Length: 102
Image (tube, rainbow, N blue to C red; front, side):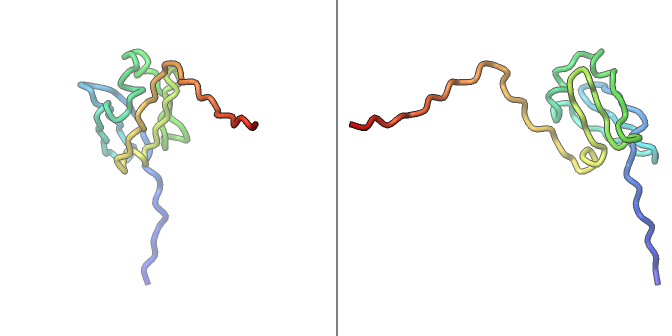
């Protein structure tokens, strides 16, 4: 009979940005490197904003408070990208059509 031990989630211990890439160092010795283009908020952030990150849940996630961006280590390992940012311009006005009874 074999027994299995529950897997512990991968945890980040360090984060950096270099040459257009996000580099996340994991507690188990691995590194995850992904293009910044996968994360538009991080790509648009200033270098200072990118350096101000926090670990969430003992390293299962990473947060950049200044740009309101959160990433999970599990998502990075799956190759998950952030959705494209919406335009911040004014939204078109939608007008409802009213029927005119006679």
